[in-house]
Length: 175
Ligand code: THU
Image 1: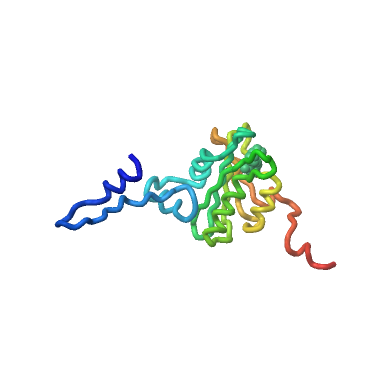
Image 2: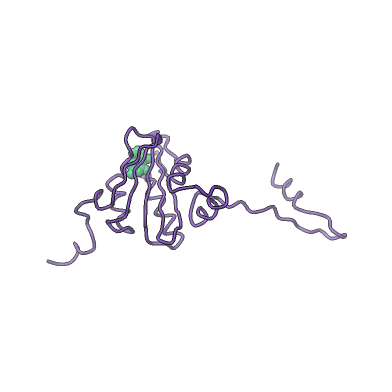
């Protein structure tokens, strides 16, 4: 149905005057604060893994063919997701983790309590080096990052294990 059709459908004649009946707004479930709410409503068993696997489906990876999904949980329980978005100018592509972090920051949240990364890989997929550093901007080194593949193999690590010798603010102090 076209836009006109749906608008006409939304108009009802009522007592001689036209009453606009808005169709219920469809909230996207796979990003931002809305995810937790939608997840609760639609499937109470939805996990960080489900969130990462779901958003992975939307990855834009025509060059590598390698779709990645990432999900982050804040200390308050909000879930943010991201997928990789490639570009014909290859270095302009972005990783799934970067997308999830951008969604979190855009929603006004700045702390990661837990992270999950998933891809179709023989071994659970590890975040790339750059993404480890990006996660470290918003997560303590004790934060659990779960690496996963599509057949259910998971590797549970801390950010500190993934990024030993992390570069931090303190390194910019003069000696
Ligand atoms: N990729 C991610 O999205 N996250 C990572 O941590 C590893 C790599 C993406 C980038 C690129 O689109 C594809 O995987 C192949 O490198």
